[in-house]
Length: 504
Image (cartoon, rainbow, N blue to C red; front, side):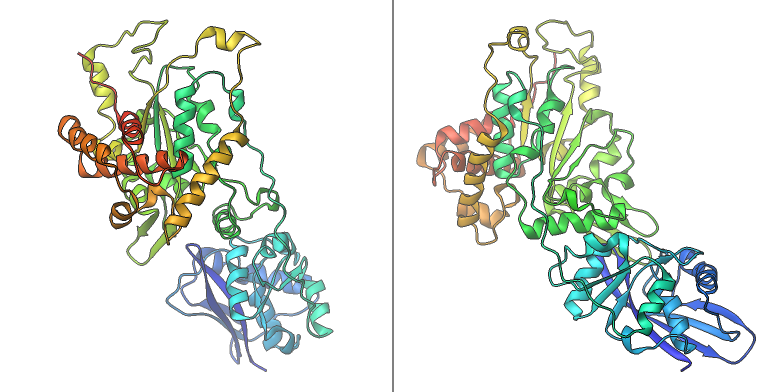
């Protein structure tokens, strides 16, 4: 046989696209060429594959070898095709039987010694192979990750020589799909934070409705401590959500640790992060921080210190829950349904309105500092919260009440989310309701309608701001077990949307 075809998978965003690795041997001067839009790492595979085959005691035939990666218009990157190319050469030259590989898809990078190294995106590849009814042959280091895919049949290999010996014996035995490990994530407890009753209430509302939150307060007030406890207030991930989180980690980090199964993502990029780091991108687009925070929390500390151009790229995903990255030759969509939690100081020195230390900033400095955040971005943040300094007695007295634990608050959050899911056929939380869903699912009591009219006239709310107030009020009513939004829920929502007044 002078022609062999091995099935493989290329990464296209979070999707594992089918690729046929076709190997053809022809008479002529010895050489090996790879076609089919390969990038540099794929073109270099010919040297890795040649050395691995020879090291394992097999031979590269002294013929003209052409390797086609089909479809030709799909970009191919990385070393994930090394193993498929090596097996294709051995099958085409008659050194391996073709039958055991016909129902398999193959992934793996080769070292010069023949060792099979792990690749990125094993979980999406396992999901795609399972849908096609094929088993997936991949590096042993990716085994546990791939077995998380429902219905996946996995064959793990560690070395090319051992794999070739096994293939001479017939079809390879498949490992059955593994049950997802028990989800036992541990998060910082809310009870560890002293005082800050209003901030804890805002965190509970944010968790119950999936709302974004901006906290403003002096240094050391506890803004970061509070934000770190939000993941522990969120409901447990469903199996489908946990699978999406694992797939994102598999593509972005190269491997997903089974111990992280069921953990809500927490991402806290530094304020020097670029726009590409935040939303994703690059010549071959990869996920950014907002996608890594999918179904979790994105925390931006010192929000005004981020570049304004960087912050503006958050506007689209905060509305749509996804990000589309376009390049000249390709376009990728990544999920980005995250909760934004941001923290900032009220002024450049940080002590405006502080009870212990006076502010040194002029009104002009404060105005310039706050103007780093655009109105459209602030309008997309649901809760605006002032976090004052904690009273010293609450910090030092051992007898001071610790407050509710995360588990107690989470129970109320889960109950509120269940009410939202039962009410909404799409099953989304209140923060992601569209306009039609909001109008249908957020009825106002007569007194609340009067209050809403007065608020629109006096506060100058935009249409988006008013709709976000309604979403907040819907969540507050859900926490109280009320189907109709009353004036108390709407008034609390309006207070939580109030921004600090400009100085002077």
